[in-house]
Image (tube, rainbow, N blue to C red; front, side, top):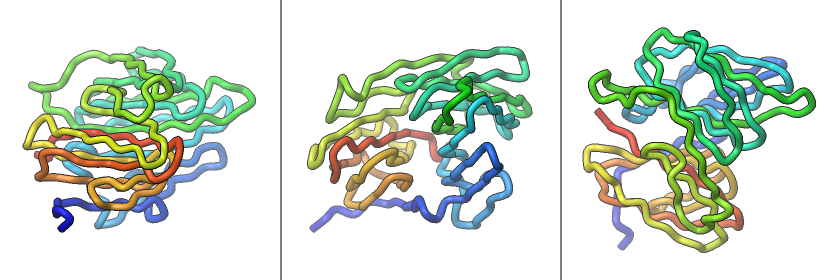
Length: 227
């Protein structure tokens, strides 16, 4: 018998869409003008957007809660700047964590003049007494570490797998939940089928099993507090 675990699937084709002529954002949870009563945050994770930004363009956003903002370029690189004049560049193979307070704004810019960029952004609510202060740039390589999960940022792991390769993610804190998001290809995660753009929230389990169902499949796993 397949062991049961508590979970909720967020399908790619049910995501919200905020779109301008030069910017497209697919929203796993409610964001901007998109609202669906079934797309509420997963614990502390309240934004997971897959964005495409046209060449030379910028998009500005304001943080709704004390948060860690995680920027993960999938193709290309982005330039970021906060309303406190802090700035930097993050490239594919890196993840930028910004520790921002409620009401702070930040801007993401495509530095290229001839090609769009694609990136993932996650917003994770933090408690002021527990928040890691300061910004931090992480580097990782999925190509040098194929068929296993590697740390992309604090409590965030990414992996690139060949078909039928498997891995297990062990939850570090029983009070946390685990959110899986497929960047490329297809996976079975804890006996649920996921394709590119699909997300899965899991809770009340000690570990999660995954199996890649296509070659060069890429998945992001994020452990977050549920309270």
